[in-house]
Amino acid sequence: MLSGRLFELRDDTGPAAVCQLARLDVLLGAVAPVADRPGAWIVAAGTGIALLTADGALEWLDRPEDRTPVPSRMNDGVADPAGRFWAGSMAYDGTHGAGSLYRTDPEGTVVRVLDGLTIANGPAFTADGTIMYLADTAVGTILRCRIDPVTGDLVGGPETFAQLHDGEGSPDGMAVDAEGCLWVAMWGAGAVRRCHSDGRLLHTVTVPAPHPTSVCLHPGDNRLYVTTARYGVKSPTATSGAVLSIPVPVKGTAACSWHSTVSP
Image (cartoon, rainbow, N blue to C red; front, side, top):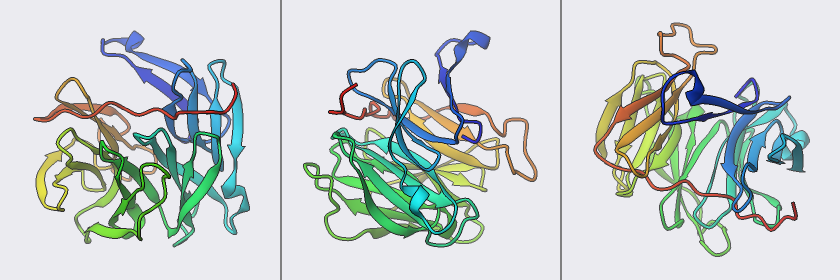
């Protein structure tokens, strides 16, 4: 993230399994592939949303965090099943309430959907695109929002899906599995939680790094992938900063793309 690098990890092993696809001169928070454009990505980077072309050029759609009262940056993001791209932001110094959630529609318009967040992480969507989960890591809250799959608008306000307490860790990146359950990386707790859609805790996976940052589940194999942090960690382990692969009893769903109508 901080080095602005995008990597591809292949299924084989050895040095050739890791390939650097791009290196930006700004922080790189999250990416999603652009449908029907091989090698192109939509990215949450620096202070906004941009297209990263196959030749490594960055084409900005908007930089909304340039217009905030405190220095801020983009953070986590994902494409939804309808082909929109959602990404959150945060202040560099963690100023309470300075973060927002943005939606980028297929025509390239960037819309602020929620504000008053502190450290926006996730989001994660159900397979039908009607439910979005969003973590505000700094306050230990996971929100659940109902989404109109046609317009992308929120149906009513966010509701609290889970409130974490001191000692439990903080909710970070998330993913929804093939059974509709939510997996949450627990920053500071060295664990990933699996929760039922009704909020019940079903399972906890311990990981050998104190600060897992995000998760994804393989759609064809029962494997959980976990990214972890090393930068700023007071007591890192040997695997802090690694990408971990863990067998689990459930599959994921296929990753979604941004369906762009913007001319290449």
